[in-house]
Image 1: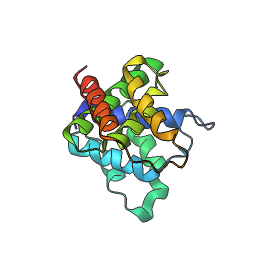
Image 2 (image 1 turned 120 degrees about the vertical axis):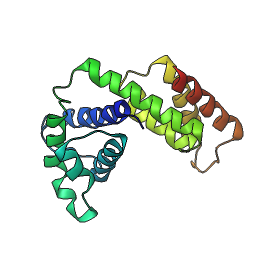
Image 3 (image 1 turned 90 degrees about the vertical axis):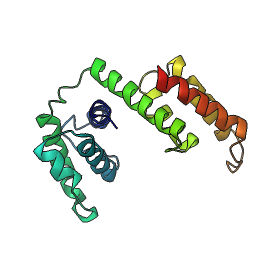
Length: 168
C-alpha cells in the first residue's frame, strides 16, 4: 500500500462518517476494527501522525477510543474538511487498490468486487467503469438460495475487470 492509497482509505472512512446524522465528528456506526486496521495500514505505508500511531495500536478491548483518536488523525493529517472532489478521488484510488489486490490474488475476487461495488461504485453513482463488478454480483445475488458457487467464468470476468481498473 502506498501513502496515497492509505490516505485515500482514511478519507473514505471519514466520508462514511460524514454521512451519519451526527456529522463528521459524530460517531461512525461502522466497524471500529476496520478503522484501526486502516490506521495500521497507513502507519505501515509510512504515514506519520501521533494519533495515527495510537489508533493503530488499539487492542480489541480499547475500541471505545476509536472515535476520538480517528478525529485526531483526520485533523493532524488535514484530511478535513471533506469536499465532494477529494472524497470521490479517494474512492477511486481505494477501488484501484482493491482491484490490484484482486489481480495479485491477495483478495478474493468476489470479496473484492463487493468492496468495490458497495464502497466505491455506489458512492460514485455507479460509473460504467465499475459496472462489471455489479453485474457479476447481481448474477450471484439473483440465485434463489444464494448458495450457488461462483463459476470460473464469473471469477475470470471479475479479475479482468479488476485488471482494467488497476491499470486505469
